[in-house]
Image 1 (cartoon, rainbow, N blue to C red):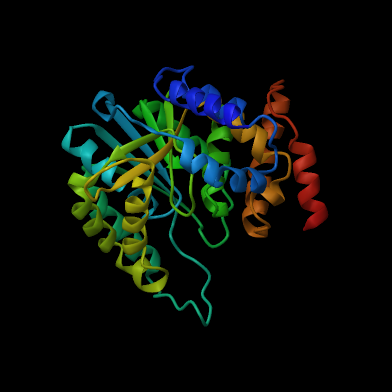
Image 2 (image 1 turned 135 degrees about the horizontal axis):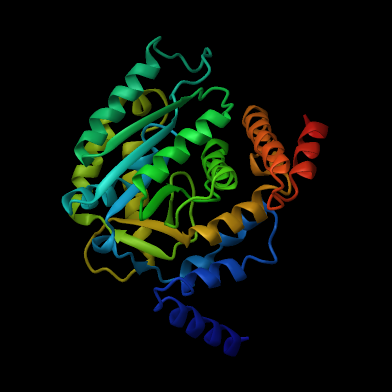
Length: 335
């Protein structure tokens, strides 16, 4: 057994010295082939084995010319990649940010919201994004009950084709909130509807530990990131202190390294677009109810838009969509 682990450690170190399209990405995809359950995959990748044996490599931000961020909510971009975006801005990298939802939520006794919460959150986002020098695109899908349309998909597609980004950042494929997973699903559907240009996916963490193969040291801009997180005052007051949690997460991420001084790091799950789309298809479509963790409103919206694209694709003779009938039937049975 000790010999096995020594060989595995050597293999992991060897793989992570590579930085090509067929480098660490192939390890990520092949090692997941026997896991199809979304929740199981998430638990497996959070085990001590992966956190102790993986050695993420620094991402070549200085070679990136354009970044597009797909953020489910106003603040996700800064929680997950705020330091990286600040560094990118200082390098003169072109940044575009799409906010998918309008930022509202259901009004309850335990969750009192200002009447103008949508305007508040969008105003906060504009203030933050001005610090990145970013172009902002507001999609305004209703956050409390997301039901994205074909028009929404085409709007994102038009932005992507217009910007032609080298890197697309978004919550990583197994980030736990259902609406974060929905963004990954939508990108797959967008590509199905109209093939996307080639780019690299940098999946960032917001709510749970990811499987990192890349990182950015954000220590030099950590105070600036904290300040931007504080701009999202409505979320910090009405939800959780994400300004505190995000900085703690960035500090905890340094456990992968042997830094002698306190530092802050943002971790990423990076894949070429083709590999990313393959993983979405593998994990998401077997059972949408499980993928979206039983969140019926999100599953309903995801199922509706999936069927809309499936119908159009079928009419056009496409054969690339798989398992959508099983997935939607399972949801109907559980719903």
